[in-house]
Length: 371
Figure 1 (cartoon, helix red, strand yellow):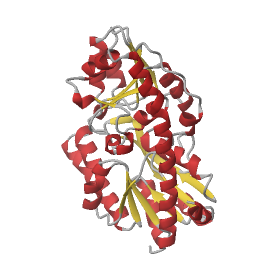
Figure 2: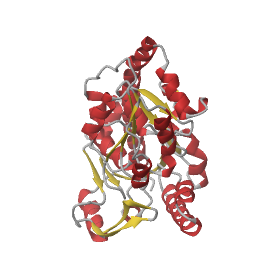
Figure 3: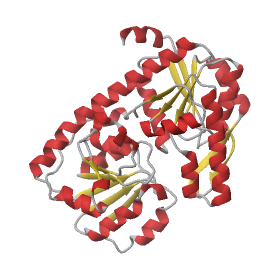
Figure 4: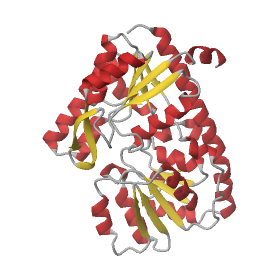
């Protein structure tokens, strides 16, 4: 590791994103990663859209089927000049949108090594969210751009082993599974001990179809003595609020800052993530880092990480989310507290290993100089 640092401390790395920082899983992933890598690299920057001004964007349009997220189109000259002035040694491309495409073209023209990351199965997401023709078009576009990236990258990173087949299908020859980093606030802030009595259940994430929100609403109806809190925005928010207007045990917070999210996690005893599509499940990792009981679906990519086995409860092993929550309620209090006490240290180690592996991969990419 020390030899790696001698090389990486000379590196300048640019991450080109198509999403706003901290507004979805991919945006937070790279915001958090950058905070760690700044300690080891000469410089690491993120170039992407800005919500409050047009310094980097020509225009933006609402994503079809989800007006809470937008597709941004960059000012090509601004991005090009930024890259030429910054002179990065490596460009990371995590999103197959207009920013990523322009970043890819410039990287190829300047012979800068590319590191691509596959965060989502865009084909599956498109078929879930959008009607046939639009869904097929969006899915095909995402696959085409990812294939272009992957065939010209030194390496393609995936966030769970189950995505290897898709990465290979899209042209990857060198594939590496990489963990998801945690924001420093989750590991640095002192742990608040969990209450022995289960009183509050938290969901933190997008309010969208693939997150299995209806399972949480059903559990709220079935267990009126528990408080259910939703932190996040998404296309289903108004519909869900209408469904829950007569449920006194349900609260919608909307989008909240990372600081407030830590507070909300510390207030709860259970966090739930019953998604039907979930390539990793960062909110579950965040909850583990704070020593909370985590209930996740078997579809979550986090379940493919053996180092995190037995750190959560798999909702797929029960008839319903309601049954899973009731199982947690009736667990022996000492067993529940004992589990919560040991999990944060395991997650902290997972996080540190993730950062070290990123450094090793950046070093390998820089040394390749083959693209």
